[in-house]
Image 1 (cartoon, rainbow, N blue to C red):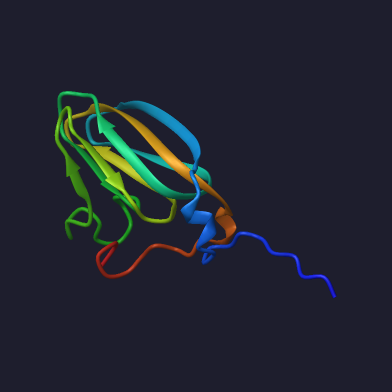
Image 2 (image 1 turned 45 degrees about the vertical axis):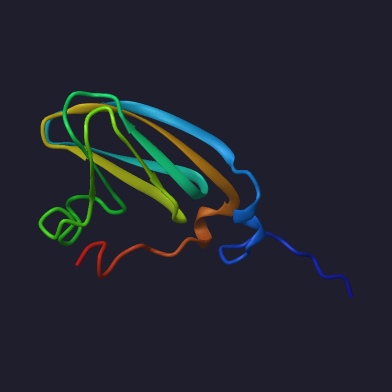
Length: 125
């Protein structure tokens, strides 16, 4: 019998090796939000706020649950950055006054279909 091994959501080696690079960036309008979807599960993501206004980073849309009112986001000041070391298949960036951002992520080879939904306490409740 032959056993074939593959990377999965809980496979340690998928997160220990250097990640596949992924970069993007954009301008967010006042009261705007953007969803950044990764082609594979990310192991880290760094968001750089390159604009003049603050930026919010969260794991769910601001319209989902209690994301904004519950303060389930991290504010990134102008000219600052934030590195998230958490497996995810997408992140959201939003801004009250509008700003610009750049983002770099390290991706695994794990399919996003294996990633569970990030919701609940501390995320949407």
